[in-house]
Amino acid sequence: MFRHLHDWDIVQLERTTDSFSLSARGINFLENIGFFVWAMAGYGRLIRTAGSDMLSAEPPDWRTLRDGYSVSRGSRLCNERFIDPIFQSEFTKLGAQCVADLGCGDGHRLFSLAKDHPDLRGIGMDLDSTSIELASAKAERENVSSRLTFISKDIFRLPHPYPDVDCVICSLMMHDILGHLTCADSPAWLQKFFPSLQHITVVDTLQPDEHIGSSTPIFINGFTLIHALMNVELHPRTAYEAALSSNGLELMSSREISGIPSTWMFIARVEKWN
Ligand SMILES: C[S@@+](CC[C@H](N)C(=O)[O-])C[C@H]1O[C@@H](n2cnc3c(N)ncnc32)[C@H](O)[C@@H]1O
Image (cartoon, rainbow, N blue to C red; front, top):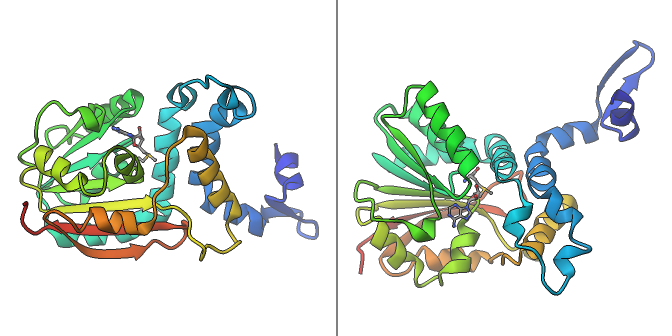
């Protein structure tokens, strides 16, 4: 294993001192480990069948080819490294009491918010049952199950409204919402299921624009390739800003997250539901 790491220029040998250390590439690789876990562990099977099955006349459903828990785990690693430091402080300013995390993955964001805000309650929703089971078990273990609930559900098939929720978080999955609902329909959907909503915070990787440099081609190419194989559309920043500033929503801020290319955070507040 060490030899492979050396051959791939992840570690470098110091022959004079008989020691080794991470190379510049190794440091960069570790910083971006979340992306590699997301892409290779989460979607490795999809990529491996890309040249054959996925391009056939009757491609298999891509959902059967992904490892949902690795998708969550990779996203958590990206979040911890690049997003959380900005997200947590912006969230605190909103004064939320009860949060719904749409597509919560392994629930990492709710756990860290619950730690920082002892009165906060939260509900995490995700399609992936393994991620939800593990999150529920962790909530029991960490004695926060009275405040944090996790449900394995498709957010487009919610059984009833959640009238306590005053803040919605949607991290790295708003592109799925924009694929289901038009920009104009999204606020009405939010109002129906979260009638007491005051704020929505969205973090997502957008359709890369022409300003993307060439320094991070693996991330951008990998991200674009995997979504193309799934036939999941990526959306430009204007689509997010339109969805978050129409029909009673007012966009409060939109900012780029440094470190992950083409990734932005948006915060909107409910001005007055129409
Ligand atoms: C890229 S992960 C992001 C996880 C987490 N929000 C984060 O930021 O680390 C996207 C998550 O959205 C979930 N997801 C996608 N479509 C969904 C839907 N319609 N209903 C519920 N969850 C969904 C996936 O299962 C996956 O866990």
